Each structure stands twice: as C-alpha cells, then as structure tokens.
Length: 423
Image 1: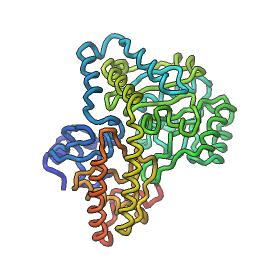
Image 2: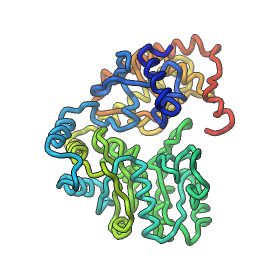
Image 3: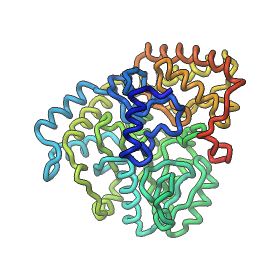
C-alpha cells in the first residue's frame, strides 16, 4: 500500500498540480506500491518521503553519475554559488567548460549550453535546418528525443504542423534508413540517432556498426547533418561521444543528465561545419548561463578524465546482469538483460503485460532495491561490489517469491495498452 506521508503528498499534489504529477518521473505506470516522493539521497541511495532507504538503480533517470551529494562536485557548486550564479552575463566558467568539452569529445569544435535535454535536441534540430536550409529529419521509430512539440511521445496539445517534416525508420535497419533518406529527397536536413536502441518496454540493442556508418555516409552524400542524441548515454558508454564505440563521429551531439552530476545543465556540441548555423539560430534562457552548474560540470569532467569510473561501472553492470540472469534461470525464469550493463533493462520472457516484472520489482522494492520494470536503468560510480551483492541477494529472494506466485498473477490493468502491440 502507498505509504502514509507519500499518500498525503499525493493528495496535496492532486489539488495543485495537473494530474497530481507529470512527465517521466510520474509513477502512474509503475506498481502501486512505488513511492512518488523522496526526501533525501546520498551516494547510490535514496530515501522516500516515509524514510525508507533504497539502492537507486534509476539514478534520477540518469543524472547521478558519481553519486548523490558527491563532496567535490557539490563543493565546486557551492563555492561558485557564493561568488555568483545567475548574473547579467556568464562568467569565465562558460568558456572553460566549452574548452573542456571540446577537448573531451572528438568531433566537437564548439559548445552551447542550456538546461534540459529537450533544449539541446531542439537546438540541434534548428542548427541542422539553418545549416542546410532544409526541413526534413529522419529518426528512428520509438526513439526518445525530448518533450518539445516536435518530438514528444504524447501528442496532446500539439498540431500536425508541430510534428511535420519527419520521416521514421527502424533503428539498426540499413534498408529502412536508406528508404527514409530517399523519401526525404533533397529536403533532408538531419539524421537523428540514439546512441543505442533504448526504447521503453522492449529489449535494448547496441548500435550496429554498419547502420551507424551508413548514417554517416548518407549524411555526407546528401549534405545533411548527423546528430547523435547523447543526453541519456553520454559519459556512461564512453568518455567521448557514445558512437565513438563504433568509430562514427556525428556533426552534432546533444548532452545532459549527468554532465554536472545532477546539477542543471545540458549542452549542444558541434563540428566546425555547423558553427555558422549554430551562431545564426536564436536560443536563450534566463538560467542557461548559471555559473554554479558550470563549476559542477567542470569538476565532473575532471573526475571523468582522472578516474576509472567508466571501467568500474561497466564491470559492475556486467556482473549484475550476469548474476540476475543466472538467478532467474535457477528459479525457472528467462530474464533478458539488454543494453549496456551500466544502463540495463531487465524483462522476463513470456511476460507480455509485464505482470511478472511488476511483481518482481515490487518484491525488490520491499527489500530496499529500486528497479524499473520497463525503462532502462543506470548504475553510478558510488555503487560498490557490496551493493551489487545486495541486489543479487534481494533478487534471489524476490525470484523465489515470484516462483510461488507466478501462476496466480493478475493482468496489469495500467499496462493493458501493451496488448495492442504498442511496444
């Protein structure tokens, strides 16, 4: 049942917030026992409004890279806050951060900063259209690029013209990509690409090298720009742009979530060819030039350069996925662990409406582990081998409970739409 303080907050929220909550952090499509409100966080852990602690394998949907409340990152933020944050103009930290990001990311010659991933992807779209003087973009079906009218997955409140000039292809399908580019013809402005297939509700997939290379070739042949949307995966798949793992450099890349370890800042990075177009578009925000998040980002990038965080995340993620697969098999279940180990998604075989998944994650929640039943998760560098042991031990008990109850599980009514093939 919903916990008492959480329930009271939900009731208050319902009176003053449309729908009670909105966006991807609403819990309407999660099990009923999942908390909506939290009170504090530290390292890899969060506490709900009623004081229960969880190891957080959502990491705030990605921003937590080095641990909640990281002392060095937060100290840099607080120091700059005491000096000056939202000012009439930016501080020199903006220049330093642009220098650091262009040094880190191979394809990047310049950087622009904003607040949210949606800001960055929309700026990328505008830059591509300004550069090419064309309108049409090609992007993969089911890929998420933000919540602006042109890309929101829920079209309420948008118009057909908001979402015009877009052609969709299947991720990792070269023939589908080529057909979409051919359909765009001479009006192709950009090919948008996710760093890997991380759609909700379905297995994730690594980028196929041939698909990524063909994206690059087609962009070059048509004069369009190739955009890699690294808001979700940036710095978790590589210290460079995520498509560096398949040897492909985009013209533009979008960044956010963890580049300041949770402090609010995002970025658009670009190559020299797109500099003039980026300078021509008009984009701004009252808080885009805040200095304190830039100080936090600089400290985050220092840790990216000087620590083995990525190697540890990768090793822990692989160990966790392998351990869960083994324990599920021992309990008589097929569990598919897809995506990079540091950004995993776990789905049960023969579970079309996720009733097994819902039961399992609720059992894990009872045991202090916060998992997600249908969205990719995240590991952070504050997690330890002991934390992974804790997840695996909790999973063993939770899978035993699932084995006892699997035959009598009721359909998940809130996910009934999955039966209609919208997966």
